Image 1 (cartoon, rainbow, N blue to C red):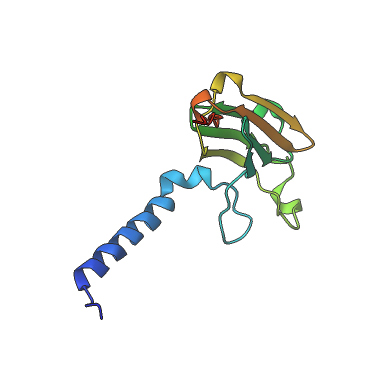
Image 2: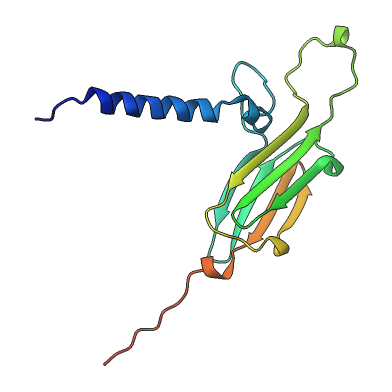
Amino acid sequence: MSIWNFFKEMEQLQSQIGELARLNAWENYPRNAFLPGISRRHFPMMNVSADDEKITVEALAPGIDVENLKVSALRDKLTISGEKIKLDIPEEKIHRSERSAGKFVRTIELPVPIEPEKVEAEYVNGILKITMPKAEEAKPKQISIKVN
């Protein structure tokens, strides 16, 4: 039977509240772009996959002019930023508005270090595909087994 520890519980609660506040802080607001309803979502939405040689990110970013899109990479971070231009329609003529517009920034932490100078990006049909070669130290190494 364990004894309930009030101070330990309060410390855990304080830690959880602090983490929640950090995730929803105002300075993080641009990362959580476009408010289509009540909830905020990360934009662009991404799929991240990896194999032995590279990490691939596919970001859903329809309706963005490639001139307004920027990609930057560090050893273990990827940042996508840009701006969706608002359609020039007078407010009084809009009956329903579900497409959002504005500036956005999203940074994700990558599972392993990459080689930033070899990153490639292409934008086709509203999907931004970024291919990032893994750094040599992050690639799996084949180890030979000696037989005695």
